[in-house]
Length: 564
Image (cartoon, rainbow, N blue to C red; front, side):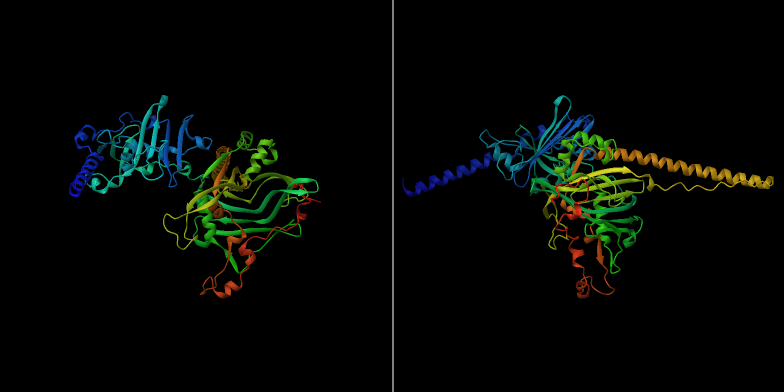
């Protein structure tokens, strides 16, 4: 065979391969389109109320599998992966049901020929099953949605793939091309084109839970009380061997009055600022704000905004005995800790400590719930008081948006990784917050009054009595409503340690360092040389450091492990 014939042979062979590959590649199955196009993909799924469980599986950018499962337990949606934490599924499940009910086929694609590689075919349209054991990290893996009804009957078992190519999308009339996706029924070969809102299939915990955890509106806040202290326990070697050494540093507390109807700086008023002084930090006295400083209203407003939309990234269940005591409204003085309760609280950064009542009668002791990083109280106009106690780091991390103040180069979609922290929330009702009824005086009828005057006095008395009755009924109703609301909130918070990102923690954790700022003289930049030279760096960089010795803890009952 000469070189010319060889060359011709290989050329014809190459052409045959190309033609064979072209003929066998996946393409629109026009000859079968009439059989499927226009029909509903899951005709058996017509009633969203029939859903008893939902599972969504997808791979993240690193190839790690994310499974999200939500089930109906006792007529309530719950999240099994988080100890059956209640899901706020009404809106989100509605979006899922809307996306899948009446899902109509717009086009159909099938692999032609038995020799076609099904993996390659599925990869092309992004409909590989993410639960498959033989998948490679990369493109081609879809999102699997499974809806199950009563008696474990499968209602929907769908894999959502890539967006439809723009050229094919243009051929589809009266359809929003941004919603066009390739999909595949799990365990079946054909790939369909449908119009579906793929954003409905969220797999993150925070997208399926109550967005406003505290259920508050900024306008209803009356006061914010910030309790600044830190508490930690370390295992140290002493002359008696390894022992727990507790370190407690009191800084002080601040009370801010809030007026949600005002604007700017008028919304906030520092009504009291108390600090601990003295060698042992046992002198509790009021402090006045430096005339050169003012409230940083941006920080305070940011705190209110974060609380109004408190974002939690996870939860951890409390021991049943502790949850039961909190649900019953028991005070911490009346809770008898079991070993399991104490271990659970300490592992998350919360401690029941019997100590001197330094803010009240310093000669008496009281049992207090202390947390690693202090706490804040929200006092609402309806008498509800929220206690938010900041515990230990969880050891986990969250990905959060990168804000402009984090970096001047922050772009839309940019993120950062931050640690997570435990949060202990309780609520109670304080009747002293409710305004007392404004009762009108009931005038006595003078003995010397004539008939006309007596009639006038009687009318005034009757009118005042009616007004007083309405005022008293209003007050009594507010008391009943407040107690009921506190009970509902206690029931909501009792079971859970909440987990928040450190990003949220820094927004709601007020300190002297971030709540005060130096005033800017009129006409000067806030960072002029004169201002910078006058800064109190200790107050700006942080609160005073804890003394190196533990002498200030020696006389506090319940603070054990202090080496003599």
